[in-house]
Image 1 (cartoon, rainbow, N blue to C red):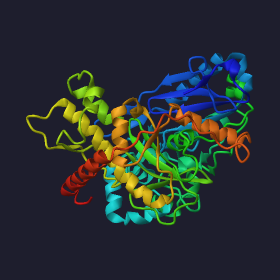
Image 2: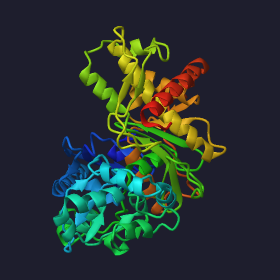
Image 3: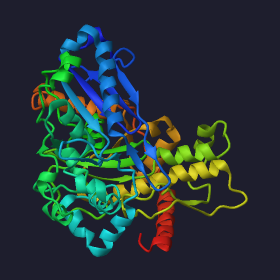
Image 4: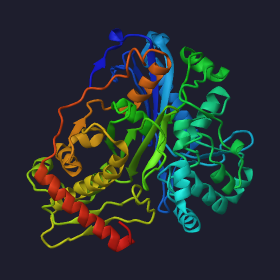
Length: 500
């Protein structure tokens, strides 16, 4: 990816805040959506997810508030006099977070993340009682522990004291912005990731809200990305005077931002991201009337519906293998020399449960076919190829909606550091993969949206694509081998869970 030094930047500048599950970071982009060199301009704070054997995955909201403040302090200090050229702030956040506020708009719960699956029993009970196709059709989300309907039921049952004091249910950045600006609001993007937004009317889902025993005013007022807040509260205006009176655009989901940053911001282009987990997403020209089972329908903003699927597995499976297997020298070279399926294994890579396509909270990881000859390299190869198989299944469903889409898949994420894995993904898809050289796709995406909202990009100046590496083309022989492997994986899934 290309950087520009501060003295090469073209104003105005946009500061981005990326609220991830491992860190909060600030980066700065110029008017051409070019990143100012991160060694020269950056703020970063590590945040630690609180986890437990019962499935907990939460943050202390006050720690997140403190970390966000320190990140802005560091970024402004590194900018120095250049801070006066920052004319907007744009943010992205991990999606599906939930925070409970009392009547004074103070947090009375931890920040629940999408990975907190303690509400899986409640999700299962809702699925048993209701035909979840209705929820899926209205909200674009399946009934699953990642989303708010099950989490609200869990909170009622397990924390009645908190529920008795609850006044507002919100995404954590809604509260953060209310702390900074005194106004509670959420973006359509973040709301679409909750399982509580009507995907057609873009209002809080009346059926889900009523079923939870609530009213729509118990949730944050809805706004679009471009509905910026301006005018920091006095405490924060004194701390960050350069940012006090400029627009702060409403935070959007990190996955939505990544699509824009990787160049998949218009209909017809599919984006793949494999980081810790994985997702495939595509912008549609209009909201789909009939949404295929297993896919979701979120939003980038009001004019960009986003359709796709996500998995709980990705780089986390590779990391688990490397952590629990002996050190393997020259691993990339050894993997690249092997034929598809040479390991003889079938893996269901559900180490953290399943999302798309079946959204099975109870799914567990399975390794089938182990013999005395099975080696650590076999296990790693099989695990990476199994993730490619799951993504190919999602792509097969997604393709039916896209019509005349571009054939190549835009790809980003940490998996690009492994040429072996990239090539096997292309083989599984039987389509070429276009690796994105931009490693900061989420931050770049919200910076581009901010520049569009500021009128600097748009009809006369289209949203810019990033730089790409050469296409990775599928091998027809390996693609055929993958089709057989996917069939074996689906058969194993059916034997265990009764569906394909």
